[in-house]
Image (cartoon, rainbow, N blue to C red; front, side):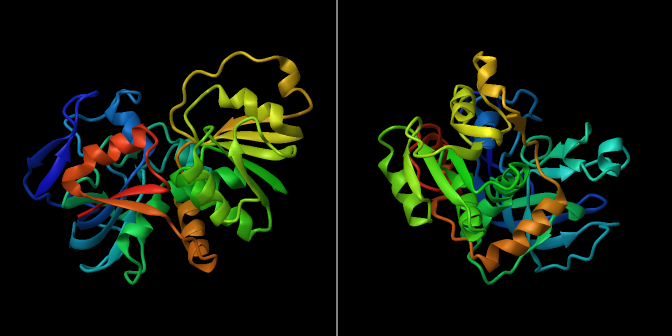
Amino acid sequence: MEAMVLDAPGRPLRRATLPDPEPGPGDVVLAVRACGVCRTDLHIVDGELTRPALPLVPGHQIVGDVLAVGRDAGRRLEPGTRVGVPWLGWTCGRCRYCRSGAENLCDDARFTGYDRDGGFAERAVADARYCFPLDDAAPPETVAPLLCAGMIGYRSLRLAGDPAVVGLYGFGAAAHIVCQVAVHEGRRVVALTRAGDADAQRLAHDLGASFAGAVGDEPEPLDAAIVFAPAGELVPAALAAVRKGGAVVCAGIHMSDIPSFPYELLWGERVVRSVANLTRHDGEEFLALAPRIPVRTTVTTFPLVEANEALDRLRTGRLAGAAVLVV
């Protein structure tokens, strides 16, 4: 099979021909149809997440069709079934987090495209328990961003409480999906981007945001803010924009250091919290909700061999919506 492989952080992905994978116990082998390109993939490639299982095939927003089912797969996924594979790829099922419904915090969790090879390839292996059955009528490239950007955005919105006005800092793959969820729920969305990012601001308006502009131009106090951009300096800015009692949710797996800020910004029972990964319950809830809205993903597609170009365009902010590799 053809695959794009990371040999060491900071290097471009290498095009390689690898043996077709075989399913282990509990696994399924997938023919990959599409794989979203996530900022987490960029953090792995650039060395900001420091323990990938190298050499590694990245990619964790996989849409694929089941080719083979391993022994003890645990749930019935027949060959031909279309499934989605998210970032969370395995948990122990025994620790206090798993037993309390917080499997996203499992200390022994394994992640797709980080601890095990992911979807920047023609074939992928996944634990059947962590695959979501999908409707195969939808184009796979439009579904792929739902499997991380959508799910993390959904969890972030839920952890923000019940805001009437929610600010989204950074308007990329995740924000452009959660914006639609928030608008569907009757919330006002304030989209904050880098100054001059007309494409992202236009997309935000098209998707129902009541305001789209630069960070610092918030038109009204926010009840909550979700910070998608991996820039720590946005946390104090968001706190300054949030009403007393509001929450600032940091939605990324990696962020630059948060600078010191006066206690006055936190006072008034404001809350700063992070979102870590997702649970299968999050994914099931979101995938049931998305077609009812319906969520419309804005994607730029790339062939598998152009994975480095997709990553570079994400790195430099030259994308509106999400990037997806089509296999």
